[in-house]
Structures are given as structure tokens and as C-alpha cells.
Length: 84
View 1 (spheres, rainbow, N blue to C red):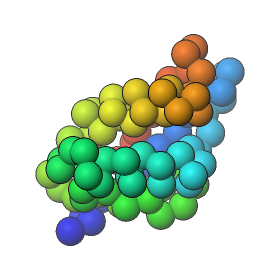
View 2: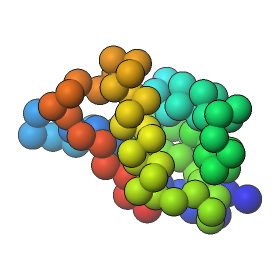
View 3: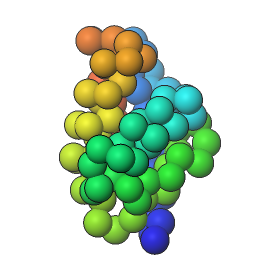
């Protein structure tokens, strides 16, 4: 089910840092009931998730970035990077 391991990083000034596990858990729990496409996501550690083959990376990045901004985790000027 979790065929891919991805790295999730956020921009903090000029550096890229791993997203805290708390952020990833928050996203995964929220999407568990709201969008089936993200059911195949499993936060593993800071900056690391395992995802299924049907999860589109770019759509995941956009949804996570939106959620992190709504939760005030990610400032407006920062970006999110998902590498798989």
C-alpha cells in the first residue's frame, strides 16, 4: 500500500527544513475523512512520509501547503517542497 517514501520540506528563509511530524500528522488525520485520494499517506518522522502509488505528488504538495497555511504552520512567504 505504501510503495513510495517522500521527503516533505518547508522553506525557512534561505534554507529548507523537514516538516515537523506534528504538521504531517495534522494533514493526514484531516484528510483521512475528507479526501480519499490521500488515504494512502502515512507520516513516518519529521519530513518523511510513505504514500501509495495512486497519490499524485503535485496535488499532495498543493493540499499540504494549503492546510499548513490554514493552520498557521507555514507563513505566506514560505513554500513547501515534496521530493519523492
